[in-house]
Image 1 (cartoon, rainbow, N blue to C red):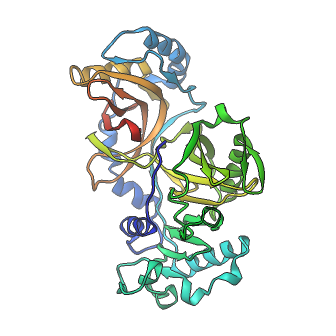
Image 2: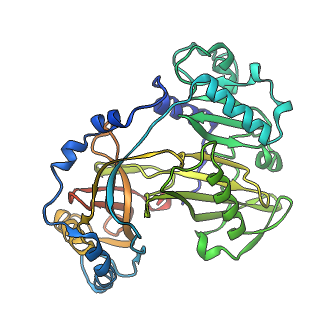
Image 3: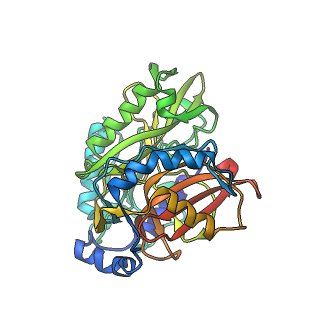
Length: 414
């Protein structure tokens, strides 16, 4: 994980780019037609091995890799448990967008649940980030954008937003992209608006970080009382399973794998990275940062959730973990770990010296061109260090086609 600080306006621009198209969603048939799944199917290898055999040999192959001395080395690597899955799939996200009425309804319900109905003037404070209306750049903050009340004729309500001193919520697609109760910014002081905490402005002084399961029993003083990492992680999981506003689709499970404990004046807060799995196989997740694509464009899912009071989610920003995933192709056969590593070593022979630190079978979001369709590929996913250049590296070998994807990043951002 890495510390980061981004102003609210940046978040808005990102949402405008990602969610600006009109329309409320795509049918499964349209998703399959536009996905390139037919082209992908033509590249699926014939030498795949039954999943049950791959599972049975996984631990032995991992142990062998731990002992080998190669340019791509797995000595000291942590191998994730092999997923309890019956098949691997090629997946695509079903992207939906709320109508203006639906967006306003989500915002109203959130204000009610957080007890902030009386603090917001809906006609004045609910704006919408859209390129279909003129912006008033003479105003400040979210008020440069048109009022949602004046844009109810738009096809999409994605980008609807409130950002005041006391609260923040922004709609992305058909759900909540980011929100803040204002609790963290109020305690931190300094005149920050609510929402800046969701982008990490108050969590840069990290005092402890690691895997949530390793730190679960550690207790820290939060606003209002002591709380363990494990208790806070359970709060996050319960919150997201309830839905933001929609609960996860069947087959999707939420997990809270990583945490940073940050100083917040005389108390602390927790910054969790959240991930999900689909039918037993985890989806690759990552943090914000700069990276250099070397082959294709890997874009791990990112969702930060902040807890600054026991039993209470204070802010979050990032990918909706409840969105539906559409199966484009399924297989009960795949490349074994050892074969994937052989493909990787041959494909990158002489280019790299890598120490792989983490590896496992994941769904990895990849597009082969920067503006291309993104597919969630079943892949052997590996994170480590390129010791030649002293940089972080992420590599993925598609478990059905053998295609290689990777990017590099500064170690401080890995």
